[in-house]
Length: 148
Image (cartoon, rainbow, N blue to C red; front, side, top):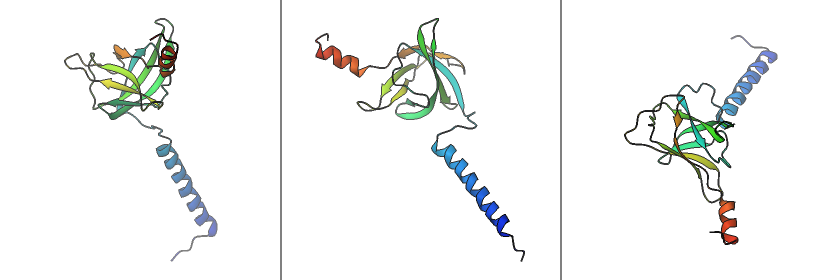
């Protein structure tokens, strides 16, 4: 039986420990290293208040993707949201993307209502029909000041 020196044994344990730390960081940090199981589409909204990158995308209550980009298009004066959706989900051009809130003051997510008979949206395409986020503070202020 061949014996390893203490330095070799410690080196192996340190290496295994570092690999476990990297693995747990990727899994718990929700980092997508090789995500070619998703395709990308975009949607234009008037208001995306509270929506964050990596927010979930849901269809019928099931998470099917995540928000991968949010930026402003100054030409159209719209907020453009990049959506990364699982390849097995086929969207049509009559799908509707809405920004919803989980709970009363919860996090925002994108809800997609599937269309019926439209043409398929190709990767890199755009969802035309959108509904922006509802601002609870604005609704409360309108109610309090009698502008409802």
